[in-house]
Length: 226
Length: 226
Image 1 (cartoon, rainbow over the protein chains, first blue to last red):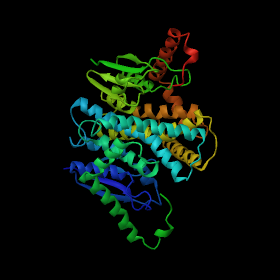
Image 2 (image 1 turned 30 degrees about the horizontal axis):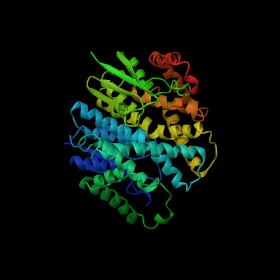
Image 3 (image 1 turned 90 degrees about the horizontal axis):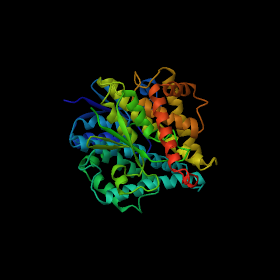
Image 4 (image 1 turned 60 degrees about the vertical axis):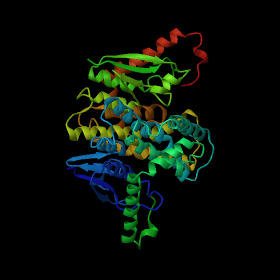
């Protein structure tokens, strides 16, 4: 029996809903059929107890018995040990899946998240640095397009690597210029987000924040951005 | 007996020397006293065989017997299994070290690497997006300063998490505005880069590229940027 508790924010504004990173952990646990509880931490007051579990004042973190794990990548890797559905045990396949997990987080997501940051600022000025950031992002997407033309998932069967990569691609799709020029990447998102575990995880996150809206209806109009 | 081969570029210009990511793997293997060979791949022609091992045409990758691993984070994690010096086996400490490894790569390095990209482009324009990127970087560095004021290493003893975090900080120090306002982060780099394993790994990388200069002396003036 596992004893898993995933902590996320008590509430976030509408913008980031469906993209808060507890989604990655929810998705993995749904894929593996693991039971878990959701706990919350206040968005507006990030105190010492929060920083003890997550040093950047972010979410999620996962408690598994007496172990506390932060960073969505570390949580996915930890959950991978529970199920072949998440991470193969055969050493060569396992190394491939773990390589792709890190690729999603350290080679693809950095230009994605920073491009999204420029978008959130409404900044479309084509300065020399911005041109290079754009080339960085599109170089990575072109590489991924070449990879995904020939295969359904990154490392044989579906794995935690796909959870991380698809979630980075979802940010491109919504907040960083879209994937119009990358049909294999688009098909990959479509395929992944049609999985019942994604649908359940996404709906649960949306419902979690919607319920919080109802609890705090009077103040919600004055809420700060996440 | 291990059978480890680390592949890096045959040559790079002077700018990135000392920062090519094979350094992280060399450093880890020196810490653990693991024997390894260095192999090379051409910087100027990144063919199908290269992309087979590293889908973004980057380095390094590590061959361990019949397993091929790419992404410096995945390589560090793989090497961690060989030595308690790199990654503790006690589950709670291990989870802490792995959380910090992902934190270095997915929470700290993204604003570092993109800020460095703007620097490489000579772009100091303070657009609204750039202001947000700066706030992202300095938010992370402030969090790390708070963490490092109270401790020598990220997860108890030195671990692979420190290799990844220190290497990200080295980029801030050299290419992304410096660490003048973060004395605990600076002390952390000083402490880490004084370790004999770092000194050996760094000297070996510098010597590797210097030897390549001598081999190709006539062409080196015309070399493209890495």
